[in-house]
Amino acid sequence: MLVQLTYASRTATILGPGDVKDILRSSARNNTAVGVTGALCLANGIFLQQLEGDRQAVNTVYHRILKDPRHKEPAILDLSEIVVRQFGSWSMGLIAATQENRQLFLKYSSTSEFDPYKMSPSTLRAFFSEVIQSARWLS
Image (cartoon, one colour):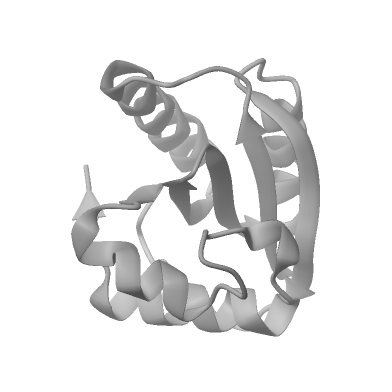
């Protein structure tokens, strides 16, 4: 059974570009090994990540993230069964709150600052759906 898990966490420290590249590299390596795909957003010191794949594999990846000292205040925001993956063969894509993406981030936010903790599951799904089509992705 395919599932999609969306969670948010706050960064425990200020992350530099090297830290973010390390997260992407290790995520790509680890996720590929277990067949998990997804996307990671980083905005205002908040990680917002959507993971998809086999239920057990996604669960394992999420529990590994919980042990990562770069994350604090983790919260599962949405968990649902899916029929098809949104992210296809992406082991992990990164969407940052760049100037080009700012309007897209704010379009789904109820406040002037992007805060996924306050977003409903349906809003989160719509956000990721639009992000796939129009956001500037970083690698």
